Image: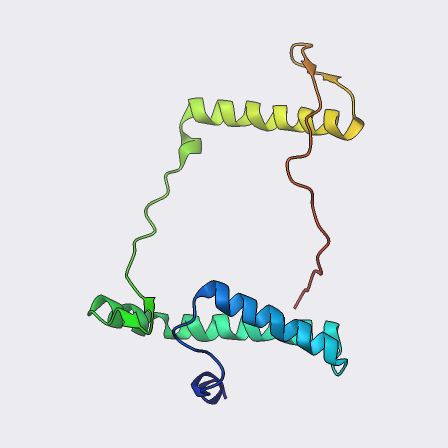
Length: 148
């Protein structure tokens, strides 16, 4: 199934950049809506399922792809592949100074959040300092939550 889909000449051009693929996909979605022949929420769910399926296919190919890229197979169309190490992540919370300040920052953020929700300054219960509200940095937007 997946092999026939991926091998179709008109499906994906290996020379297209990520932005072009995204733009083409958006145009295709808008054309489907304009055609009036689809149920948008059903197709959205089916596409989300397909994305999960393709993520699984990619995971199944990963080990072999890693071997091939490490052996020098690094280009496919304009796409370049390379092996990268994600790097080690340190457990900073094991440092007592960092752990102390992290907890203080967490408590302060909760107070700022409370002041901002109320729209007025609140008192810090530890020291009585005034904690003023802050403006919204980025407004949330509506989205469709899909639970598979």
